[in-house]
Amino acid sequence: MSSIDQISLTGFRNFKSSRFEFCSGLNLISGANGVGKTSLLEALYVFAYGRSFRSASLSTLVSHDSVEAALFLKSGSDSFGWSKSLSGDVRYHINKKSKSAGDLVKLFPPCLFIDASSHRAFNKQSVYRRQLLDWGVYHSSPDFGSTWNIYQRALKQRNAAIKLRRPMSEIAQWDDVLIDGAEKTKEMRADYMQSLKDFFSKATSILAVGHMKPSLKISHGWNGHYADALRDSAHNDFRIGYTTMGPHRGKIDILINGIVAKDGASEGQQKLLHYALRLAQAQYLYELNEKKVVFLIDDIGAELDSSNQVDLIEQYLALNAQLIITNIRKPSWHELVSSSCELT
Image (cartoon, rainbow, N blue to C red; front, side):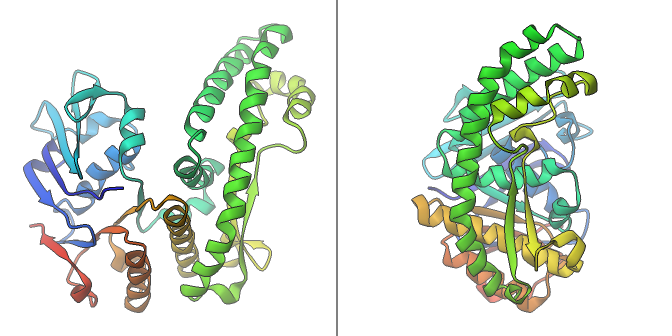
């Protein structure tokens, strides 16, 4: 699995025309606030996830004085392209051939983005904790992406029928597809979580939060067989207006001494627990199939103290991971940096 080697940005955020080179190890992007450090990470994120972490509208990525934003990236022997005009659709290219967003995400190196608010996913709606879980399942289970997409399409159709108050027989025509997708998703998530637990235990010990006895808990979104849960909730679904049970309601939680972390840990401890989870996910992927994760870490100085920063970076580098980190100023661990640039 290749690292990110180079990216060119044109008309993207505050970049009129810029190019950046990266090494396979630790890369540092420094500079004052407002010079584009986070925007550079955002450009890399667009390739990895097919969306922005800042805005639901991709039109906001186009510079105010441009009609189109374009990104071109090299990773090993592959090249990736992305463009968005103010008046048109998003276009994706792999090795100069037009592709879908799904094709691009599948081939692109697995990336994890962490910023000063990432740990707050455990305080937000369950969708954010589901995304934390499914990132790992997607990259470790080859069938997860297609299974999840089929389930989501059937769920959308079922919910549309419920919203229109169609007859129960019409609503139920989607149940077989939902049941098959739900049970397969549950199995893949459960297998992943079982494997991840040992890695999480090691990671929490390394990052000095093992004394809190942290553990991982998965909620699948229903109990028992999904066919029974779907049948039993049918009338309630019809009353509320959508499907209330299923893997789309699943999530992952971190517990400390049996209590969810958001209720029993300080913000600093929650940050370390979140980093430990991400470290565990990267370690598991590397052991499973030698997938190398690219970590995009924004403003690490606001996240952790210097000692924890060094411990974390050394653990990530031990996985042969690529790190692209932003910081306002030169950090204490600058001697570990393989490549750096300062934005002005």
